[in-house]
Length: 467
Image 1 (cartoon, rainbow, N blue to C red):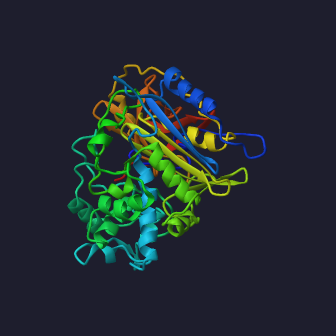
Image 2: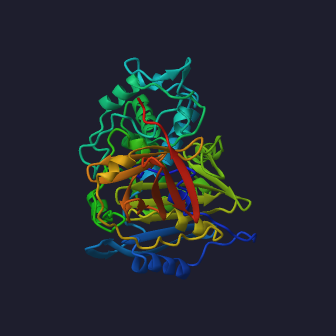
Image 3: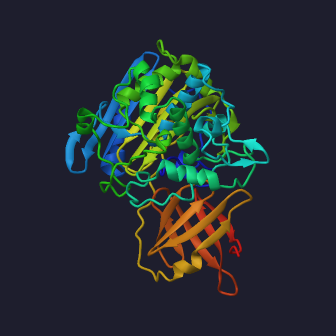
């Protein structure tokens, strides 16, 4: 979830690992264990991008697991297929299957308005008489923002922990939609969290109990849960920041359907096999329903089904979702036609999307780590000059904010990321190989910012400050 997933077209490196190019060729097979292990060794031991990574592969002939690294920077216990990780926004795929399952039973329809599940005391935002439906929530087309504006965590290290149902309802009752419902797709943790809450409410239970009863138990996924057993706690990989410092686990009591699940590679391979139809599954019809493309996604070559994203390219459709919490990154992807799937779980904040796609199809290249950059001391008073909004194109706006002695940038539809000064005017991101430079006009005022990424410079002109 960083916080949940990052899915837009401009900071494409956050999602896809930068621009990719390739020659047309036959569909490549998934690499062998030795090749995968060497990639993990390079990533962990040389590039210092994680502490422990476990890769799972499923093919028509069976499954295999390749792992390298350890539970924590100070715990040499080796990670393996039974190591527990937070899987973040991959939880959204489970929430979508829950929706399909309950709809298949006739509890409601995909187009049922959300308010019918919440009850008469909860007010949902509407626009021009239209209502937000369950389908809108799972396809991120509800018009709801990525996060509610009353989301103000007391602990940034565990940001969702103190967000309550009362706060959720307060936001819904007061929020005014800024565009028509169904008009556009904008990734929303709020929307999928609300969906999970509404589904559980309709069955008079909580999200964890609902997903366990209807999905995890029927699929035999005994190592996937929100609340950890003593055994799972012993096998839990400690999360680490991009700088490989230990960080806290995340708790999502209200928005659980957006990113609360924890799992293992072995369990996630079981989930991938069920989606691929490898063997009998009690949820095969429901999973097939979620695989159907419903809308275009706001990233090149992407569409969205129920929950999962579909990436087209090279004559293949790859169904996938990533996940990210404070100290974990995850990837689930599969090719329905080839009957292959890949799971990657890591205990650091460094994205593993490029690795997941590369293993599914080597024509998607592994990301070359960004050059090591060093932050310098600057006069932080200049941050006030930079704070503002900058239009990158018709649909995308940079928002630059100062928080105490730190500077942050946020692109439309993205979470907020800290940037670090290389000079008084040039800053860099640590989550992706991208830099920004602030520029001034003839009058000396800051009037634009330039995004440097993938050997391309994109200028964003400053918008007038709101009155």
